[in-house]
Image (cartoon, rainbow, N blue to C red; front, side, top):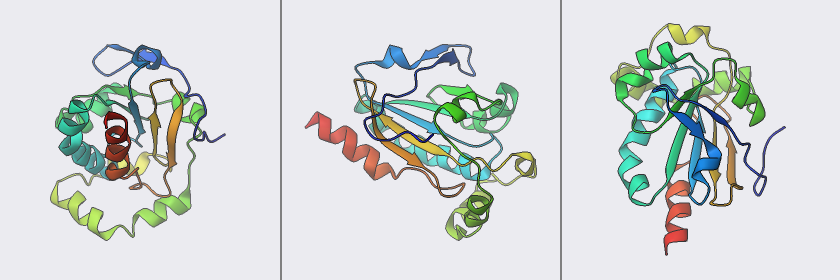
Length: 180
């Protein structure tokens, strides 16, 4: 079942790829951005992480907590996404336990729509993110969730294709609104 605005975020406590325990409850009182990616070898996901890294300084300055999930084992995450050295916790979820809890779904149509993202595909090749390992991943679509200080969902964004994520402007507007 898909989550909606004002639903209570699904709590979790699990290890990230560095062996740290990450608990959503420990971030109570802070704004949290949870982002679900596909497999760690997904070129669209690696491109999104790259774009997210460009925004991290402004997110950090505003106190936004970022937590990423990948439906891959730790070793695969380190081999692909880990090369970018993201400064936020990344949680391996190869059995998609948290993906199911947050209502993320698979879509063959979404996979096909991804192929129409010509600008992203050009950047994927230019950055060296294209690989054949991604072909083994299922068609699970990404999702993004903005969670307020009380643990309620402010935005639940369910992707329509592999490259569809919440616009960074929406995230920045949300964190800026609470500061002003």
